[in-house]
Length: 326
Image (cartoon, rainbow, N blue to C red):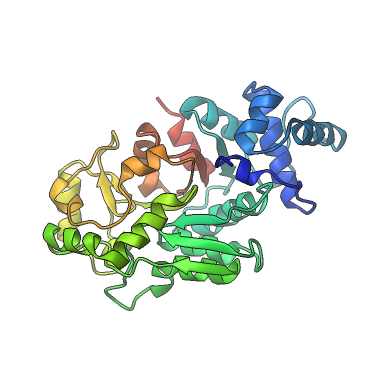
């Protein structure tokens, strides 16, 4: 069974069906995919795709344009998919909200709806950590994916007690599913590259990283190069170190790895001390779900898209518009 076929099963019967219906309708009417291509991409049968399209027309979801009944900006979504070659884009209209916590909650609910709307829930998911990921866990309904194996894909051991929920994402998601968690009990950034190499050679850590690489669906968020950075809040980096990264062209971090505008590593020495999946693994993963919102993350979101690290993007409308600019 391939990675996509693992999602093929009975269509959802609750509100999650609306999200799947919108996704299929966009691909068919706006993006111009055939029903066979959509079935392959989404792990559905052609009969299921046809049924969803029929229902979309019958229920008024598809008229002259796609009009999702959920809180989504379908026009921006289709434009993002076309511009960046995404499998799916979910854009949440936030009405000009700039508060980071409200933005995180908005996109987290949308990402949770996408996960619960999958035709069949994944048996394994790899996750990063941070405020957006913690919000995603809070938005997931209890019992959404019984038996799910959640694997941590980058180091997250908290160095400070502040905001500990943001570092415990894998365990919290496993409890919500409910399922099991394979943790990576190491810091995100180490003091020396030799320490990282020694830890990666340890059998326990090596097994955890192997499980992370085996996950067919990876979910992660991104951080800006500001004092609000979760890596700064957790004690991994100082404001002065963040300023040094900005001077080297860093626009944000992905899995704790700071990148430039073209998606390249900004500081190789720092990256050599960062423990977790390398960014090239994201580029080759079957499904990568990225959550990103807020002005300070516009540049890192564009960098991730430029490097082809994202296949499913969940964002706010302001960020979406910035990503459609030349």
